[in-house]
Each structure stands twice: as structure tokens, then as C-alpha cells.
Image (cartoon, rainbow, N blue to C red; front, top):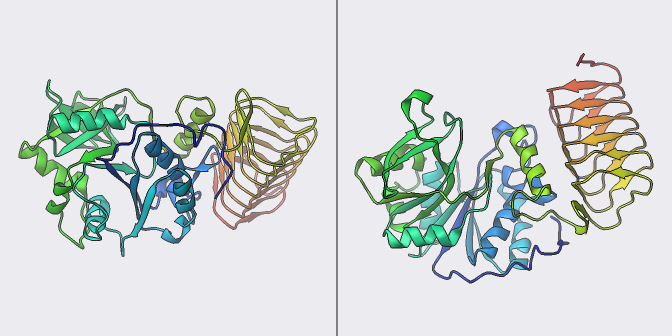
Length: 391
């Protein structure tokens, strides 16, 4: 966990919202992003060299929230370092681990039964979304309408992979459809995984049971015309579930399209650098983020929208563009990496080419191999010259 902060990360002041508490559901496995998430929980996957969940905590702190619960499951033991980050952000953070997968509703009920929540409005965020909701705006609607649930909505073109809401002219939810076919609705408003709840709603969920809030409780509340409302404020939102979206989230943070801060010192426009970076004689096209102890040999090239983690070595002649390289990775001479992800501890050989690919943790891509739209699992060694894909 990085402890050094860029300018502004801790300096954003906000009016405290003492009447709001928050929970981040961080127990999922992130299967669509594998092998990145094989042994790294999705909320800990780095975005511009900070864990995604740390960015979320920073946004909550900047919004004035002080009490936050992390609902954990998969690889819960990996989250210990997050408490230090929360302390730096002046947050009271509670970690609660579900004993077995309980679904979204079951996880919330487990936290409630563990005493995590009081009777204040509860802001719920999914631990895999990059978003900047207006917490004050969401709270105002929630309070003024005396709502049981208020959804922070976003609009997407293709609604078939999301929960879609249809609203009346007053913003009340009239209909909810889970992953509808295009002809089933004209709405493009979706549940963005960010909701404000009256905690009394959680008592409608059976205890110690796998239970989906979206598929089981929400449709029943819509049918009963409970006080459910939606808010669309135009804030940034992106689901990081797929590799191209994950790369997009890193790119958007570097480009300033979302109000999250890359790790490191902001040394020039579009460039963030950690401690002890060596890059003499290297072309770096911004935006880029370089972690601690990054070593770029003379003749290496970074062609923009690139994130390098801590202790990354890029050898002479290597060229990188629109990629995320995790900690302790070595990129060989004259290698080319474009629109790809290389996980922690991996090695990419001399002259190797990666395009639209993922290399798993601790894996080795031998010299002169070419990977196109490939996913190499963790701890795999690909010998020299065994795989070539004609682009």
C-alpha cells in the first residue's frame, strides 16, 4: 500500500456530513477481470497507482463523510493496509467480513447485524465502480422525499448488462428491469451501484442467507410503490469489470476526466512521479504515472496513457502505450506493449509484443513472443519464440 501522497489528495476540504454513514461492498471476486483478480481483490486493483477502494474512500472523505464500513469477503486479509489510508483521510473505517458469499443484500444485512450501522442514512457503493457522485445532492433528494431508497443514476447506451430504472416525472421509480432486452424499455437510466438507503430497509432482508438486493428485494419494493427515487446529476461513472473499462478508468484519471488523484508528485502537467524515479534520456509522452523506484533505461519510450507501478524496469528500446504495469515488473529490450495489462512480478522478454492482452502475476513472456487479445494466467512461463500471432 502506497503511503506517499500527491498534492491535493489529502487537501480537499469539505463540510462534514455527520448525518450520513457509508458502506462499500468489497467482497466480490471480479471474475470478468481475471487473471488480474485471481489473487487480488477487485477493490484493491490499482487505478493510477492507488487501490480503487482508496480512491473511493478519498471521495467519501472529500464529500464530508467520516464513518465508513468495508463489507469484505474474497481475500479479506488483503485489506489490512486500507485502514492506514483511511486514517490519513480522517475516516473511521470498520472492516467486516462475511463468513460465506451472501449476495449484496445478505452482505448488507450481515453488517447491520454486526452493529456496523445506526439509524442515519446509509450511502452504499459497490467496490468496483469509478464514480464521483454528489453525496450532498443525493442526500438532499433522499431527505426531501423521505425516501427509503434513492439511486444515484447514470445513463448508458447499451442497457442489456445493467439494472434499468424507469422514473415518473417526480423522479419516483415506476419500474425496474434487470438486464433487459433493448425492446423492453426506452430508458437508458441504470443503477450505478451507488444508493442512499434508510437502514430500516435492511430488516426486510433475511439474516444469514444469500440474498440479492437487486433481484429479490428491489423488484418487490417497486411493485409495492415504496418510496424509491432516482437522481441523475451527470457525475462521472465507469464500471471497471472488463479489461478495456479498467484501462479506460486509468486513462481517464490521468486525463483528469474524473476527480481522482494519481499517486506521486505532480511534477509537470499530466505527469506524476514517485520517489527515486530514473528516466534520464527517456521520452515520456504525458499523461503518465510512474511509481516509486521506476527505472526507465535510456532509449525506452512511453507514448502516453501509461501507468507504471513501483520497482518497474523498462529496458532500452521498449515502447509502451495505453497500458497498466503493476509493481515489480521488468520489460525487456525492444518490447512493445499496447493497450495491455501486466500484473505484479511478471517478466516480458526482449522483443516481445503485447497488444490488447493481459499477463498474469509472476508470469514470464519469453523473448520475441507476440500476444494479441490473449490472457496469460498467473505463474505461467512462455518460452522463447513459441507463440506468434499475425496482426
